[in-house]
Length: 135
Image 1 (cartoon, one colour):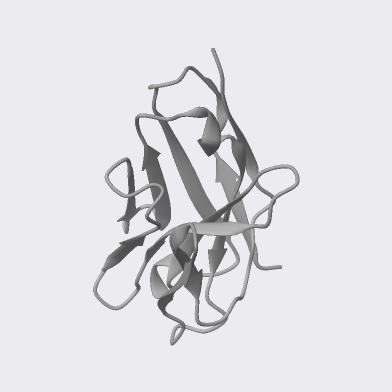
Image 2 (spheres, helix red, strand yellow):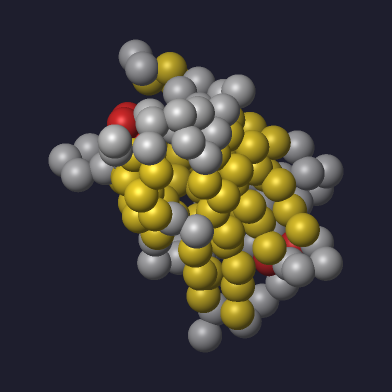
């Protein structure tokens, strides 16, 4: 069974950092575009970052640009989300998702709150990892 597994969440103070990990069992994550999403209680799921499988191009939502960094470790077939300068608004359950096929790519859309990230189609999701920013 294809599955993504997130890890690395936890409780961190404002201004702190965390690194989330997205790993897989059942398929080669390196072959797919991968995105990170988050969902806070009472809010819709929002895409914060994406890395393309074609050239490792990276994309960020306006709310995290300059603070978050997505990357791949191809030797470990893993995708990371390094989060820095965290604030209370970053508190959410974080999920990674892959495209349905290797042709899926990162995409963006605009709302009144700025630019957000999505995928052109969706394949697998992880179960999520909780990030709580609080003093």
